[in-house]
Image (cartoon, rainbow over all chains, first blue to last red; front, side):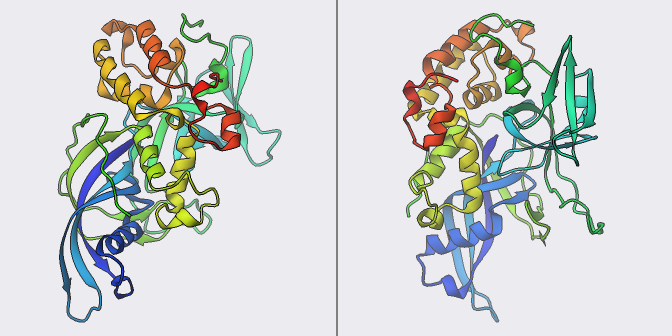
Length: 202
Length: 178
């Protein structure tokens, strides 16, 4: 789910950092610019390393030095078809929301939850809805009791909204849509009964 | 500190069409927007396994400081979130040798690079865990038993809940798989 990407950018090192060794100062500026931000290539997770630094000119009217830097970053960008283990965050009538800790916008919409299923008000949590999968005679609840595996169906980068209602959810610049409607997906407790390294029951 | 270079375990696997495009930045956890000028993307250097990212964070000292104050110079809070996530996955018990050896041996099974990456990250131990990772396994005559046997042989077992609670590193090689 992680990739390495090489970028080139102009970086401004503020005058307060000019006493630091150059690499440290540039890395600090890069971290402030890129860390935990969503680019079109994914969510930047870490600065991997700096390849080259050029420049160091001071532009007129500015106390800071500007460098042209080529560097590599680690981005979180799952590929379609990847299976990822996540934790349950919340659910509502539209579907589930899962979280990876560092990334919280994984959504499993209702059509991608195994059928037949039903959605009922959660008895433990008044504001939430709970999804239940009915398979044969058994009913399986989707909740936060264990990890949930999902397969990536799609990644989208919604455009930034210009106007929003005051109580709307915080804007998610990167949204991963997942499915749990397949063998081995969904809460791991559903599949624990299967014996390891032998033919799976169905 | 010095940034050491890591040799990639998997060579570039995916075709990327993106080169030289303007990007706009948005904070992932807040609402502030930062629209930026053109940033050239020179190349996409390839996929990393979860293990390689965890190794990178460990090399920066993420594991050593339990108070997370001293190491905060090199490891930021958002990087710690990634670290916490990865420590609960198969990557936390893997070693560079086991992952490299495994991906070499996978060549015998005619798997796509994306599938090998998925298997390393998830460490499936049963048929039902492996099949969602593979694309059209029936049509391709994949040796599912062989792959599972190779996983069992080469990749360390998943971290157990007790090991996580102790917050120790590299001691789970001998633990039973949960």
